[in-house]
Image 1 (tube, one colour):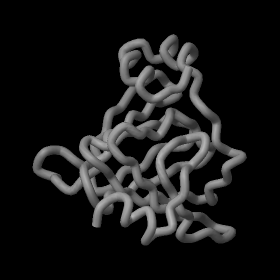
Image 2 (cartoon, one colour):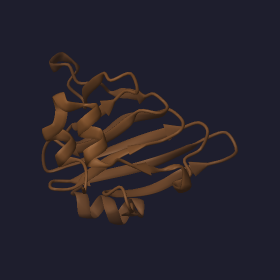
Image 3 (spheres, rainbow, N blue to C red):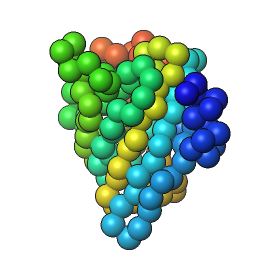
Image 4 (cartoon, rainbow, N blue to C red):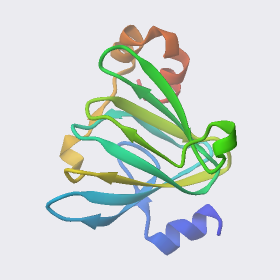
Amino acid sequence: MNPDQLIEALGLEPLEPEGGWWSQSHIDEHGSTIHYLLRKGECSLLHQLPGPEVYFYQAGDPLDLLVLHPDGRTQRVVIGPDLDSGEAFQFKVPAGCWQGSTSTGAWTLVGTAMAPAFRIEDYRAGVRTELTRSYPDVTARICELTDA
């Protein structure tokens, strides 16, 4: 399937203000799961959530994920199918970290799981000037993953 067919088949909708395409496939009092798709040129803007989020590779090209830890560490993780080249099938972003991503190719489909469940009101958008001040070693990537 191509990304437009996946958007249709999975009932994906634009995810505002983060970017990309999503649908919530499960939610209850314990947690939630989503399908999330990025096409070339789209990104998941840097954002922070109060709980951990686990990413699962599903299809397409690998996902290039930037994680900014509260202690100042930065981490770049490629979530994809090629374990021999260092990609990961799944990865957990700890609670309170900043996270943002892009597809490494034409498109990427991942799933994510959160417990407690994702709530849009918990989403906190990253501010470029604050993040580049705190994480100067990845300024260029932060600029790619923020609006301003």
